[in-house]
Image 1 (spheres, helix red, strand yellow):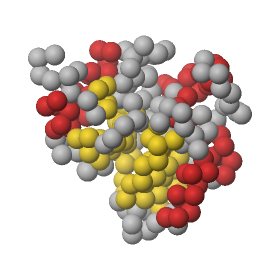
Image 2: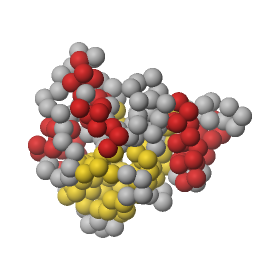
Image 3: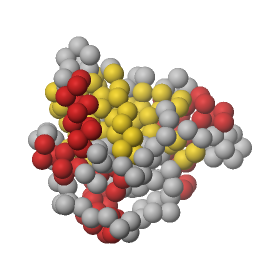
Length: 209
């Protein structure tokens, strides 16, 4: 598995292009902005994109989803519980003085325990709510793409519609921690980290807090 991180848009959101080395099949995770850059990366890697995966439906992660879907007509997968955020995308955009061309269409809702295969790679879906009701994490044996649940040294905000601090902490401790200390966490913003590092240094998660 190879992973390319593209920091896109004014919110410095991490879009991930993930591919299978054996088959050159791949997925795009959270195409928030700068679709031309994303498509250029896909072309450079000579990837056949099989799915567009959405961790959650906040503006910075899905603003240009419709644009990408028009260029790459593959299934878009997201958790049902974030559909209300997607429906409200124009309102999300207006809060930042932005507009969206269209409300993206979801081809399939995914849920806890589902699997997504491209090439030899299988993602397992974990429902990790708290930052948003439908935030999901895409997990392999080595890595987890977690959206805005967990960051290097921090956690996702919970003051947006559907946010829940207690649920966020529960998701991290009961869904992500059991994945193992060596799992690499690929967040929606900022650098990658590990479960071990966050257990030991994250002020929101240190034992006793």
